[in-house]
Length: 316
Image 1 (cartoon, rainbow, N blue to C red):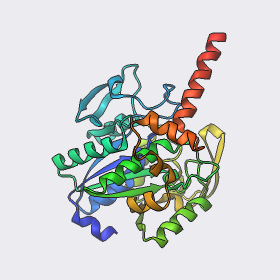
Image 2 (image 1 turned 120 degrees about the horizontal axis):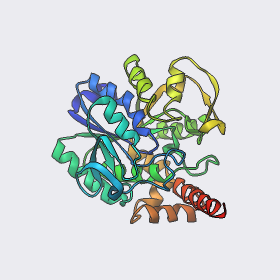
Image 3 (image 1 turned 180 degrees about the vertical axis):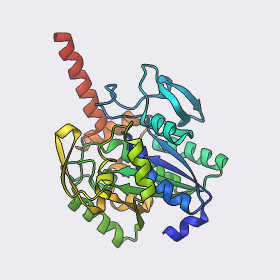
Image 4 (image 1 turned 90 degrees about the vertical axis):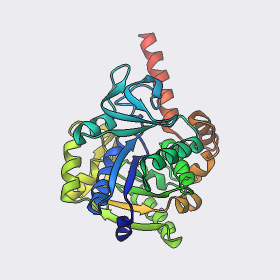
């Protein structure tokens, strides 16, 4: 896989799960740039609820200091924030790297997102799009008991699956369970099935350069899942607490590896949730589809938590 990277000129690297997944694009950015490929980073305006108590992703209408590209994309910089003052992980990454990044409007349908991505790529002469998931829940079949946040990954995998018809695409998975949702055994099962279908195209580890950049970024970007690959690189092995101590994940050498996967094979052979939401009209429609099929979602969790918080404050 790595040898074939040299055929590309410019790549768009998208943190597809929100919640600082953009930090997980750094190892792939450094890898591609070593082959002479220019890179643009992107992410979703959706921080974890513990950081942003607004339920769900932020719509573009609530974001200031941005430059609209189309219905699904906008440029962000170090000053990009919400009207109520929240700076996104993407804004902080932009500040550190001193370069603009892209925010995606995940409220739109997967089809709309894919069409707008393709239009942007054509205009910017981008010939590769890589969606990066930190943790590995994009590899979920849907049967895993720990799966709690499939919505963003499913919408973006579906969009990238559509996009694959017009441009070369990859899904990158970093962390090997570092978000505390899928166990290493469950990730093993998905990767094994993908291998049988020739869906795993390669892998790459964290380097000294990517480690140094990520280490500096996470001083200002709060993240659990993207921190685990770094402590794995540092040599830690064993149980490590995340989510402010509520969850423990197994840290091992595989946590620092990014696996590159064929999106079409992942969509077809593994991700029930991506297939379910592929024709959804918007994020709320997609959310309802998953809930009706018995999935838990991050949007449902945030809405319920926000409602309970308001009710508690009113009682007080």
